[in-house]
Image (cartoon, rainbow, N blue to C red; front, side):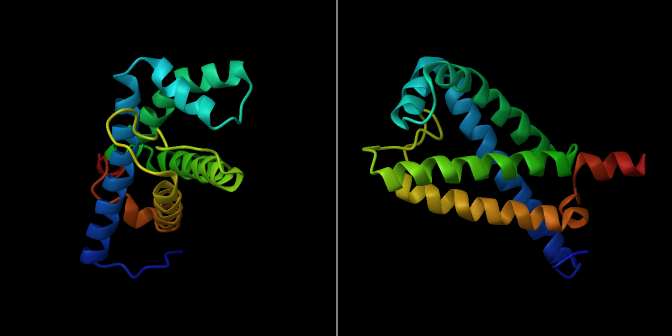
Length: 157
């Protein structure tokens, strides 16, 4: 059941929202993948949340997960699964950045976009929380969010 009335402007808004969410993950992943993984490892270590083996594993795999999720959300291929992945990732980001803020960790930048974009954790928690809510909105209105997607194209073929 959709919470938003079906109309062309709404479909266009949901399409643009899906493109923005997918682009966030693509830019974030590419910013990390084009740099040595040790740069992202340093960022992860600053959060003081994982054991050392978990930090290395996260630094090596997380950018690839973001790339895959970003591709699926942006292209609209397996849209619902891509959005579920985005929802989980945004949830993780909110928890990780939130605990760093609560603990008063001295972070100058979140490290979310690698070396490309530097955002303060206070900005990131707002951005990630809003993105989490908007991704949930897309999931709740999945039939409209699938407009202009590879899913809708393959449904017609």
